[in-house]
Length: 373
Image (cartoon, rainbow, N blue to C red; front, side, top):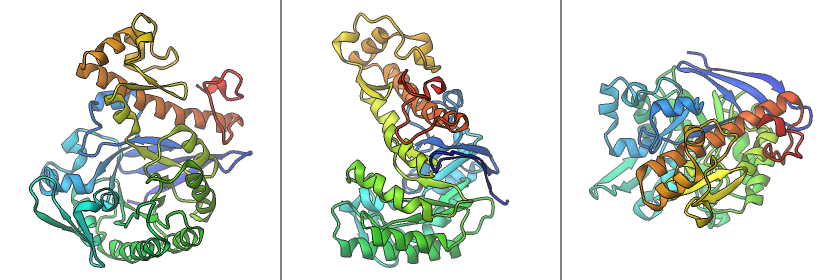
């Protein structure tokens, strides 16, 4: 299948654009936040709930699904879509992030990365070829190239080595990729170093892939560094392809990235916060355990269309979280995912209306984009 990405409208004030990324499981309207479903499930949420909050694309993780249940079982089921009952697009991360996050239990070599399984201690080797083979078996619509994501504290020499290895691994991923119904995205690395980022963007863009990602951000660097990387790298990525900023889900970071031409985002923040009793409301993070909510019988967010806000009160959510009831974690996770997706949809409306800006805050009554929320 030929994947298509159509730019439907551009913002006259910024580099933001409205697009439609077409896959064989439907279209993704951009800009768009994608919930993370590491183990073929967005933690605590059903497929019906994801539909209700207008999720158009979800993520799953190659490394973790390889460990459990194994890609062969998922392939037997007919692929990830049938296995998890999700009929819309799916993106699978290659396991490159685990090269960073599981640095204490892996060994990186030119051939690939050897992990010690946290489940049984067995040694597992993930090469670029194997990462692609696993993703081909999983059957996601978008598959990511296997890359080396260096930590923020890495030296210039270490980041340079990781970036150059990422380029060599990308070439191997392209050769190993076998399915034309899966779009292979390349990943730009380079840490916080402008010269390495620009070199990486040039190399990856030259591969003429269906999409491109900026990786290696949100790994410990301050927000100003992320924004600087996005500003310098995004214009170098092909304009006629979707652009994906990996692992970023804070509202200011997404607004800044969209203003500079990014399209897709993912992050574990909404469900992780929900599981720990925190709700995203009007650009703020609320601790629902706070005693001030005990007698508050109003909706969590009166403007929000999610089930939690339509059917329950702040006092009830406070009670559930204080009582450690699973329902409270589920309702807050649903609300938080809805909040981030609403934010990307509001950006689309503001771009259409000509009111979008880099400091986009639709919940502020004084904002020109207030009517988009």
